[in-house]
Length: 106
Image (tube, rainbow, N blue to C red; front, top):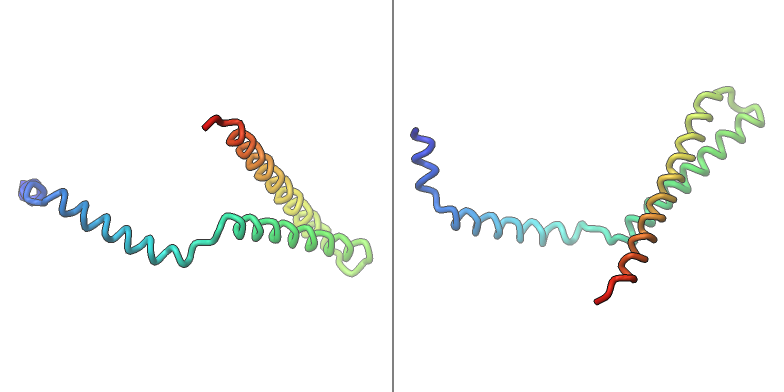
Protein backbone atom coordinates (compact mmCIF):
# COMPACT_ATOMS: atom_id res chain seq x y z
CA UNK A 1 0.00 0.00 0.00
CA UNK A 2 2.91 2.36 0.64
CA UNK A 3 3.87 2.09 -3.04
CA UNK A 4 0.41 3.20 -4.11
CA UNK A 5 0.50 6.17 -1.75
CA UNK A 6 3.84 7.24 -3.26
CA UNK A 7 2.35 7.04 -6.75
CA UNK A 8 -0.61 9.19 -5.74
CA UNK A 9 1.68 11.94 -4.51
CA UNK A 10 3.66 12.12 -7.78
CA UNK A 11 2.75 14.99 -10.07
CA UNK A 12 2.26 13.42 -13.53
CA UNK A 13 2.63 16.71 -15.41
CA UNK A 14 5.93 17.40 -13.69
CA UNK A 15 7.24 14.00 -14.76
CA UNK A 16 6.10 14.58 -18.32
CA UNK A 17 7.88 17.93 -18.35
CA UNK A 18 11.09 16.33 -17.12
CA UNK A 19 10.79 13.56 -19.67
CA UNK A 20 10.20 15.93 -22.59
CA UNK A 21 13.17 18.08 -21.55
CA UNK A 22 15.35 14.98 -21.34
CA UNK A 23 14.12 13.76 -24.73
CA UNK A 24 14.85 17.15 -26.33
CA UNK A 25 18.34 17.14 -24.83
CA UNK A 26 18.94 13.59 -26.12
CA UNK A 27 17.58 14.48 -29.57
CA UNK A 28 19.90 17.47 -29.87
CA UNK A 29 22.86 15.27 -28.88
CA UNK A 30 21.82 12.54 -31.33
CA UNK A 31 21.24 14.93 -34.23
CA UNK A 32 24.99 15.23 -34.74
CA UNK A 33 25.30 11.42 -34.94
CA UNK A 34 22.38 10.80 -37.33
CA UNK A 35 23.30 9.86 -40.89
CA UNK A 36 21.21 10.97 -43.80
CA UNK A 37 19.07 8.49 -45.68
CA UNK A 38 21.30 8.82 -48.73
CA UNK A 39 24.40 7.98 -46.68
CA UNK A 40 22.68 4.90 -45.27
CA UNK A 41 21.67 3.67 -48.73
CA UNK A 42 25.14 4.44 -50.07
CA UNK A 43 26.77 2.38 -47.31
CA UNK A 44 24.34 -0.47 -48.00
CA UNK A 45 25.19 -0.47 -51.72
CA UNK A 46 28.92 -0.39 -50.94
CA UNK A 47 28.53 -3.35 -48.56
CA UNK A 48 26.68 -5.33 -51.23
CA UNK A 49 29.36 -4.44 -53.78
CA UNK A 50 32.10 -5.54 -51.37
CA UNK A 51 30.38 -8.87 -50.77
CA UNK A 52 30.06 -9.39 -54.54
CA UNK A 53 33.77 -8.66 -55.01
CA UNK A 54 34.71 -10.96 -52.14
CA UNK A 55 32.62 -13.79 -53.60
CA UNK A 56 34.13 -13.30 -57.05
CA UNK A 57 37.61 -13.37 -55.54
CA UNK A 58 36.94 -16.61 -53.68
CA UNK A 59 35.48 -18.25 -56.80
CA UNK A 60 38.53 -17.14 -58.80
CA UNK A 61 40.80 -18.65 -56.14
CA UNK A 62 38.95 -21.98 -56.40
CA UNK A 63 39.13 -21.98 -60.20
CA UNK A 64 42.84 -21.12 -60.25
CA UNK A 65 43.64 -23.74 -57.63
CA UNK A 66 44.86 -21.31 -54.96
CA UNK A 67 42.20 -22.49 -52.53
CA UNK A 68 40.59 -25.84 -51.78
CA UNK A 69 37.87 -24.45 -49.51
CA UNK A 70 34.88 -24.93 -51.80
CA UNK A 71 32.42 -24.85 -48.91
CA UNK A 72 33.54 -21.34 -47.85
CA UNK A 73 33.43 -20.09 -51.44
CA UNK A 74 29.89 -21.39 -51.93
CA UNK A 75 28.73 -19.88 -48.64
CA UNK A 76 30.26 -16.51 -49.59
CA UNK A 77 28.69 -16.71 -53.04
CA UNK A 78 25.25 -17.46 -51.58
CA UNK A 79 25.61 -14.63 -49.05
CA UNK A 80 26.48 -12.21 -51.86
CA UNK A 81 23.48 -13.43 -53.85
CA UNK A 82 21.12 -12.92 -50.91
CA UNK A 83 22.47 -9.46 -50.13
CA UNK A 84 22.02 -8.46 -53.79
CA UNK A 85 18.44 -9.77 -53.77
CA UNK A 86 17.76 -7.81 -50.58
CA UNK A 87 19.15 -4.67 -52.18
CA UNK A 88 16.87 -5.17 -55.20
CA UNK A 89 13.83 -5.65 -52.97
CA UNK A 90 14.65 -2.50 -50.98
CA UNK A 91 15.03 -0.60 -54.27
CA UNK A 92 11.70 -1.95 -55.51
CA UNK A 93 9.93 -0.94 -52.29
CA UNK A 94 11.47 2.53 -52.38
CA UNK A 95 10.45 2.98 -56.01
CA UNK A 96 6.95 1.73 -55.27
CA UNK A 97 6.67 4.15 -52.33
CA UNK A 98 7.86 7.06 -54.46
CA UNK A 99 5.33 6.22 -57.16
CA UNK A 100 2.57 5.99 -54.56
CA UNK A 101 3.53 9.39 -53.14
CA UNK A 102 3.62 10.95 -56.61
CA UNK A 103 0.07 9.69 -57.28
CA UNK A 104 -1.28 11.29 -54.09
CA UNK A 105 -3.34 14.40 -54.57
CA UNK A 106 -2.44 17.31 -52.37
